[in-house]
Image 1 (cartoon, one colour):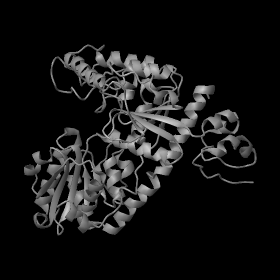
Image 2 (cartoon, rainbow, N blue to C red):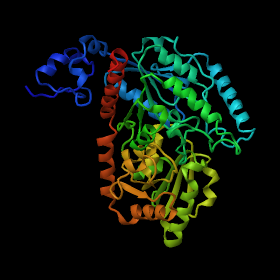
Image 3 (spheres, one colour):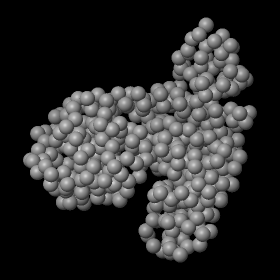
Image 4 (cartoon, rainbow, N blue to C red):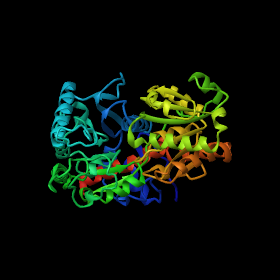
Length: 473
């Protein structure tokens, strides 16, 4: 017969999958999951109207929250009945659920910070760079948890889930998928390793803890607790970038567990190119200048690379003084006003913006987006910029080179090299063909980050997690 079945929103064809397979039809994910051809029909019937509970600390704040909301929409648009449970619900969305006892999460957060403060010898440095997950909210008695077929964890730190609660979630018997937005699930206490490789065997002598610490320190103890939680759990981990996936697979914690890579999705009906002049008028940027855009939730955060950005602008203006007359910088994010005076080009601090339509205007107003981050997974900002047809310039670190195709839809600069960063910005503004860059950026988004493609990948992982729990396949 030799046919390929299209994906059906209601999964109605799944109950007939075994017989269809014998007829020569190819299932959308049969290349990875040959067990589908002989799995019992009740399993396929169970997947009709699959219910997934996503869990993330915040509903709106931070990159993980943005990604979780986009995945929530993506799944619901492609036949999965998904809900999102959060510690801080700020909208009236019927598919977003407030975790029980909101006051308890605040208490958990403060208690964990106090414990970390003590381990840091009462020094605030690194207080928000590490997590020990020693306090959390039991969500296993909520109706949303009980009705879910799959539990999907995202970023669950700072008082939402403790390691004890995660152990209870696993003990419920429900399959668990965990999307890693940073390396924390695969290390003892850190979200960013900064080159440390101890987690490949066991975390110890952690650089985030005070000097003269014991080899058997807090990172070692939390690492060992995680190892007990993960043992025999069957958790299916997902990373948003190939880079983070490679890092995660090297962790001793994740040895023997599934680690897949699926990018975050983006809604191209929200993020799309707008008329540049009109966009600039709406966000009060000069219509007759070239605009360099920098974006960060908190602009002054060291790892977002603002120091390298400032130095690159300084170098570029020194080499091309004419830019003082025809180029400006727009800075989107909190504390933007604190860096304006350090830039040699005229700068416009736009502050923190949460409205996606306004954010799309800001991207569309730019000629180039610069992301000099020192550590990144798969930045939503690059995806948003490219979806608006704007080329990006960033360092060769993390998942950035997976997104920016060098001198095709942007420029990948040498790591921590402000001179090369400046060269990349200048190349985009003065040497490359803007129409080609724009078209390549839009093609990349359609090909790699569309909602449908991402949803199909996650359904594959959910199916595998269900099969593992029911048949240890």
